[in-house]
Length: 353
Image (cartoon, rainbow, N blue to C red; front, side, top):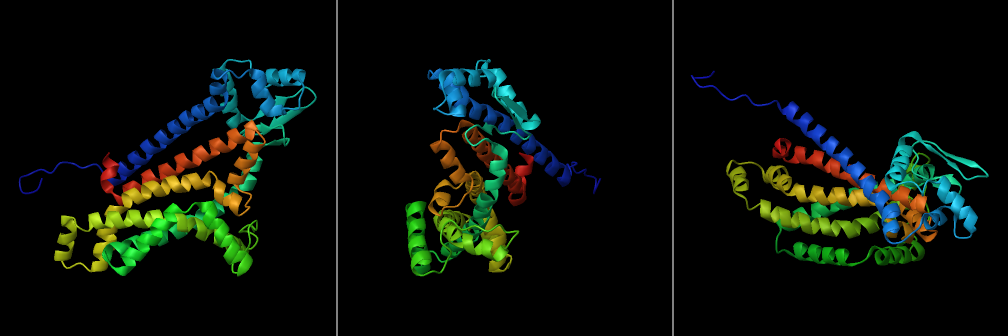
């Protein structure tokens, strides 16, 4: 009670944040389960609707050179004659409990987490994904930092100097960056900066960061710059549009009228209001890259998840295709979860939604 009037009790800010995080975590888990159902249906249910038989699915495990009896036994041992819901549960539970595959002459073990077993390479899928993941993670991490810093910085300067020579030149270059495909830009960069001028490392070179951080960065610098040039162009244009809209708001004029420094007005008030769409596409872009930068890895001959996906599709190796698809979907969902949590930091109003 203050001055004869009572103020309504407000829930603590910490409580709102915890509730918001719990809601988003639950939603992410439910979404992952739904995604797993969709992924399984794409590879197992939809082919059935299109006329595929259990034997047809089994050939994707044992290969097309196997005889009819081998294919039939493989389909039986892999459970392709079981109801589709039972097949899904066996596949989904194997992720947490592991699985064994009785192929008649041998029993193959796939320990948890089991994302499938490739009968073409005679290896479980999960160790292969772990072996390729550091390359893709390194590529995505370095490139995303470059394009976020570069794109947002150029967008802010262009918005503050609207109509200037810098603004027009930057947006023209950004338009070119968005228009050029990654394989063209990558090949041009390799041709000039690696093979002709010998400034950067050639394609196919990768050193783990734990062995030599300097070589790790040097070998990935050209792929980083190539990816960053493509993505930063989009971020520069988006940041410029958002800043132009935000800087014309009434609260920006109020902040300037209060005598706040222009740097504070621009970064704390202007940029913060323009960050929401940037965070949205940043989460999607990073999630897609973590699932495998197919064209970039193929262009620079990097053995990451993207090249692993291309090889699996080329060999029609269903377990490997299914495993990498599920992992890619997981990273997209995880990235969107992180973006949802960042929304609460950028815009506190989101916590109450």
